[in-house]
Image (cartoon, rainbow, N blue to C red; front, side):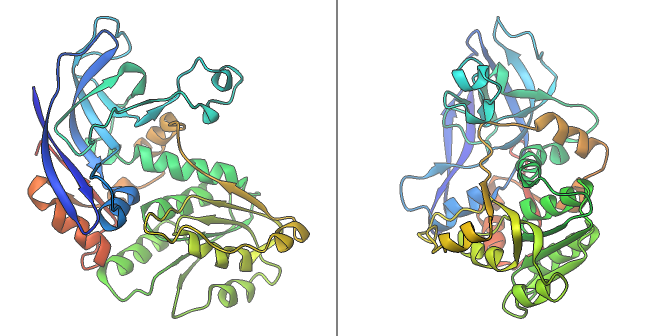
Length: 344
């Protein structure tokens, strides 16, 4: 069968391509994509990626329509989340209890999640019930945020600052509160456009005690006047340059976990290693490959502990993809999370 899908690169060069999806082999499953979220990585691609166009979309909620002869974990009609990178389960790291270090992963084989139909291996699927597809596609980004919060090891009643109010940062702030933080702050660009005002509104709804507008307020001053010795934890969802602020506000012995990327050349920053050593600061990069924490993320969404309705503000189809992604970039619309509905 034919499947339309989106590919993109720098300068909002987004194109629709048609791929042939054959019958599933013995271990594969054909799924119909009902919802695919726009990730910050997709935005990085269409804003900064200068090489060949990349397949767009990996936050996928779909319906099983056909299964290979060896597949027993799902059947046609099942609702599933598709993992874009799945642990192999048989390598030395997986067998030693560290699947997060697996380097033999299964992936989605160059297919865009922002497409109509996909062929994926059976072990890349997580069944779900009790959620609509649009809410369910938040599972992947929520799992990324959850992994960063777990890596932060937030002390009970501790203080946390999240740098960056994008979807991942907002969900990290909410999860930090659920994890037992006594104080949560979030930083972002000045609330001078529709996007930033919407983000700060959700931050307050998600339980943030303080919102800080970078450029109008000093992160260092705002945090240190309340916590003179610095905060327990900093979670960095914004681009790498913001790590500078993280070092200014972290306490002695604190933990900084970070996952903000940049594909436009601003991924290198200066770090004072002496300061890190003398203040015993721990840096923990969070890279959510292979997929992990999907089942608990599904439960958090299903139970309403993370409000999907507050997160998903816009849906779109093929014809509106360029407009929506452009608005995410320029802030002209109050978009928190945009979700593509490739089958209408």
